[in-house]
Length: 199
Ligand code: ITT
Ligand code: NA
Image 1: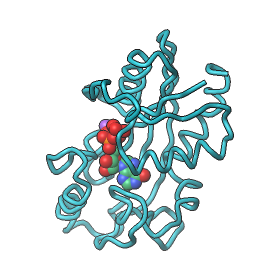
Image 2: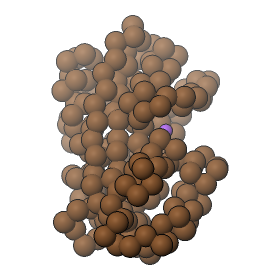
Image 3: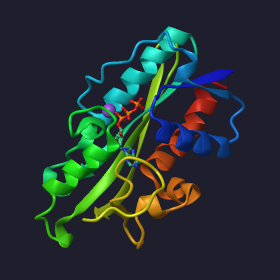
């Protein structure tokens, strides 16, 4: 069986392939790019879970295959959880990671180190063509640096320092990040669900 990965974010795809490869599922993981005719989904949900389900259902219906989707973002305590579901377009242009990071750092410039708590959040959804759906979640707690560090990962990785570590996510190896990340936790939790519902 094939399973479609409902994401166009290159950073996510790399991580999802590594996380799911470790699970040794008997499925071929096909990227959304194999289905260029599938229109982009409007992420109109109010939560990560709703948006992940919207993306998974749209691709499952369009392809007739089981689809998994990721909706994720950075939630900053002192901003009441923002950027949250708006993380990918915080500075206005969808997917402009550098601009998003710059704006967030500017917004936090007066915030003292002890008030810079934040977490990454990931909702991982599975949808089948018949409408069956499941969603699971994972988070990674940490604090936000005021100066970016590291070149790995993507998005806000250069400023999120996981709890108990002295490096940012962008300074971790891919395996180190996946072992503790919101995405690693969510998709490892999704694996038994895939085994149950897809076979
Ligand atoms: P798809 O909808 O195609 O999956 P997207 O980039 O639009 O791609 P989201 O709406 O879920 O996906 O937004 C995710 C944003 O959250 C992403 O652009 C980053 O800014 C941030 N983000 C999510 N996971 C992250 C991670 O592991 N490290 C750093 N930033 C992350
Ligand atoms: Na989103």
